Amino acid sequence: MRIDFSRAVERLKEADNILILTHSNPDGDTLGSGFALLRALRKMGKRAKLLNHDAIPVKYAHLYEGVAEDDFREEFIVTVDVAESKLLGDSFKERYGHKVDLSFDHHESSKFFAKETYVEPDSASACEIIYLVIKALGVSVDSDMASCIYTGMSTDTGCFKYSNVTPRTHIIAAELISCGADHSRINELMFDRKTFGSIMLEKLCYEGLEMFCAGKVAVICVTKKMLSDCGVDKSALDAIKPITRQIEGVGIGITVKEEDSGRIGVSVRTGEAYDAAQICAHFGGGGHIRAAGCEFGTTVEDAKKRVIDYIEKEII
Image (cartoon, rainbow, N blue to C red; front, side, top):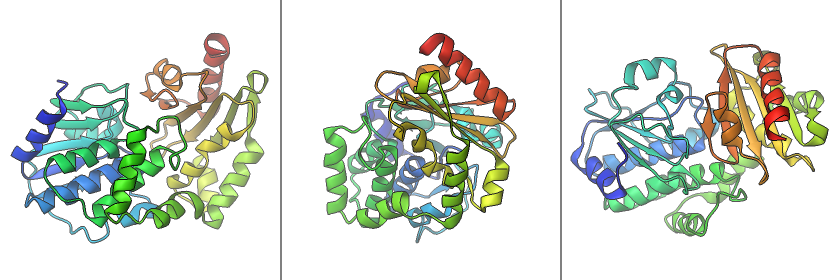
């Protein structure tokens, strides 16, 4: 059931022993939202913990610095930045997918799988929503919360350069800096600092880059072997996905990646002329107009072919 902002805030005020779930293959927005909310709830005197289906990449370690573990039987389950239950990860979907009490989301493709959902599609990130929630809860935003929220906002907006950025985004970012968000360090960690292995992975991706549809579509494929050979984890893909859209004349950038589960994930990034969510929805996925994703139970080559064939016949 879709609910309004006030109802969502009241549900949190009433709840205790809260479990926060983030989506699998976690990014800065889901983790920043989750850890900011966790810190706020604990500041209110509530018991709260966060779980993720997958390992949290090292680059996000600053989000949970100083957060002590807590073990209790959850009575209320919240998800942040999760558009549908399958994004929790296979085992978490089975365990928690039908038990989620409250969901905070900003995806137009939200499936409203929770008992109650607050969704704000015009928000540039889930972290923007959580910032407003924390303020509505009456919690003073400290520097740790501010850094968590700033991380999610920055990563989901490409360091505030994507078209999803609104005036409110910049206003909130300014308020977060005033609250002590370490914005310079965060942006360096998220966008400027790379390991040698990450650079080598980028090199392999450039070498394997393919162009289709008279240069309007660019495709990069990433296998588990490539990650292993370069000694990097999946977080290295954060720097790979934007590469295809940086090429002049490209309107649709596609990254095809082999997941640990054996399934094939496809990330689509588009310019103003194309709808990434429409492309991915055709294959059972979803997301935003400019950034979306879908999955296939096939091979990298087959997944690539199916997506390109659809784009050639129906989109371009």
